[in-house]
Amino acid sequence: MILYTIGDSWTYGTELENPKEECYPYLLSKKLKCDLVNEAQPAASNDWMFRKSIEWITKSDISNIHTFIVGWSHFNRREEQFQFYHGGELEDMINSRGDNNPMEKIISKNFANLRLQAIKTFTYIYTLQEILKKNNIKYIFYFPWDDVLLQDKWYDETIKSDVHDIYLRIDRDYCIGPRLGNKQITDRISPKLNSLHPNKEEHEFIAKKLQEFISLGDKRYRWEEVARRKK
Image 1 (cartoon, rainbow, N blue to C red):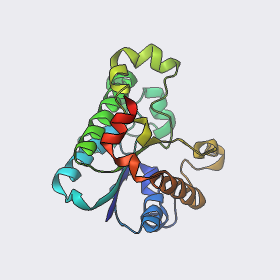
Image 2 (image 1 turned 180 degrees about the vertical axis):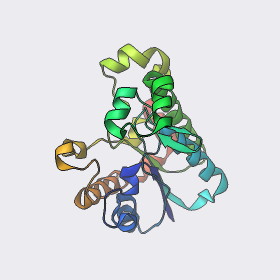
Image 3 (image 1 turned 45 degrees about the vertical axis):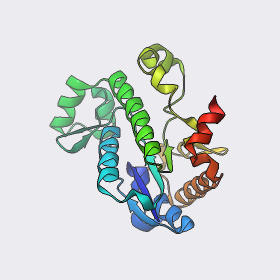
Image 4 (image 1 turned 60 degrees about the vertical axis):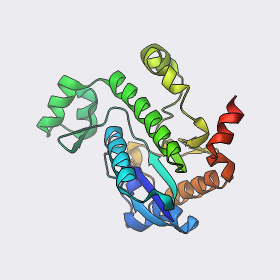
């Protein structure tokens, strides 16, 4: 069986001494006794994750997938010319990435649009959900940083009119994070700690919580039962 994972630096294991064997996907694969395919890349954008997920599903033998995990990233990241860019407002980009990348500046100055990026991400989430369900692939959508599906003030004022019909069709039973139990990893992360990524112990914690989520029972992955339960 295969555990397939895709995401950004959190799923890749950035800042770990041995990312390949200390990241939560590897640790989870050992708990599940699965082979691992981890296609995560640092700074990856949601549009790239969606694209690569579809490519992998269509090119691979999906009959032996144990679980398909997507660690969704920030709205504002984007893929251009097969490279990743911050994609947010110019000031935010400079604060987080510096002022030494001309293409970053061009994109942030001329094309930054958080509203559009958020709308696209909701579309990616729903579309990939339906493709996974149609192919009977067990999946988890993990949100490490932000509760993307939170209906907060920004949601109500900015994107609700565009995405709420999509939002209502996203199956929250298969979404988890950023809070795992009573702990949120981002509570620890700050510039004072000189780190923007989980440490080794936190990757172990994430793997443990995702295993618990998976082990809730096979009924979680019986789509017809889920549909009946919602009627």
